[in-house]
Image (cartoon, rainbow, N blue to C red):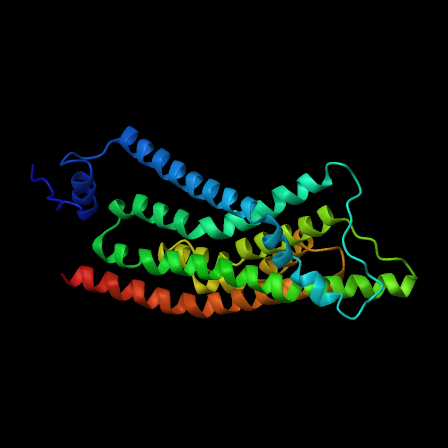
Length: 271
């Protein structure tokens, strides 16, 4: 019986070269994954310690959204702590946010090196743009939350407090908790356009399914907004709005991904 001949996969050749000329087995891949996670954790730990050393300066920098929202309210005297251990919560939240943002590029680099041997030469060329897109989307969402949404949320809160005649005495740990949730939450939420394009490239999604899924996506965006923002409809709508725009942009981008994928398949069949 005639047997089909399958040409060697470039990914296997790369993997063999990385492992000293031998194909990597399952346990070898697990070992590589362990070292990838370990190096990412080391980068996070170094950033965490560096943020802790410069904690007062970093805390003042993260105070900017509050200062911007309260610049016209001279009666506000600043943040307070309401329990003996609240300051440690502030310490952990500030270091967590700073370390995550600083170590993310290194974690993406290590992850890219881990998955690179499993990719073909054409797919490997997309690895760096994909990592840059991941970093750019996260920083875009984090910047939007820090420079616009958080000051807007505080302004709305101040308005309703003054409307009801309440005195503004805010706990520091609650403020930094809100800051971390909004910055990390919106930065992570901004990753979904990249996930959509990967699923479209793999043939799991297409533009027709994305259009049909629009009502469910809209509900999901407002659920995400409710989880990472204060319980007021104004702030939640401001968080959901950029996610809605990104979804619409993802549908447009998906058309180009489909055409590029189909062209590649035609070229492969032609060869």
